[in-house]
Figure 1 (tube, one colour):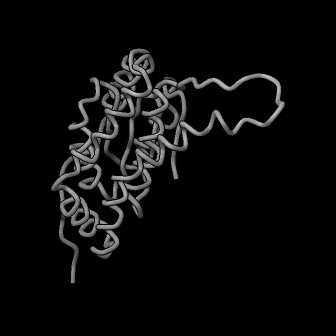
Figure 2: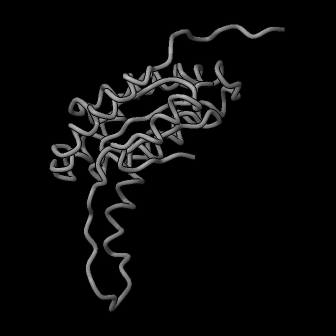
Length: 195
């Protein structure tokens, strides 16, 4: 039994990677100045945005990379609690300072963050990096695995419903050897997250 295409399209060009990074760079200063509670509220919109999309996202994962539908549904549902877990962790960190340690802790965003996603947990692992980055005041350019482009596309559609300012989240599609390399070596990407 042969393989059948699940989705079609073309990968980003070098110019499109540059534009995505530039968009994130330009949005970073204003995004980092938005109060944390406001950023948190915007990110918590994922619960509303996921309504009616869990099964669609799970089906795309299953079709693209062969994950059993039961596991794919679990992965899609895991998006709902990630913002809350990330917020709890971030809000608790100032209390984790060592007693009697000199100095003080201050939160500071990095700026434009690149995220390269894997194929085996194509939404969960991108989301695990993306939401804490946004909460911390960073902007993001992410590249889904080239094995799961439809899943990445659907995730981006969900993120578009969060009412984030333009340029805060950007996606580029394509191979790891080309697009992943361009993103990871880009001079204006301030941090790179991957699994």
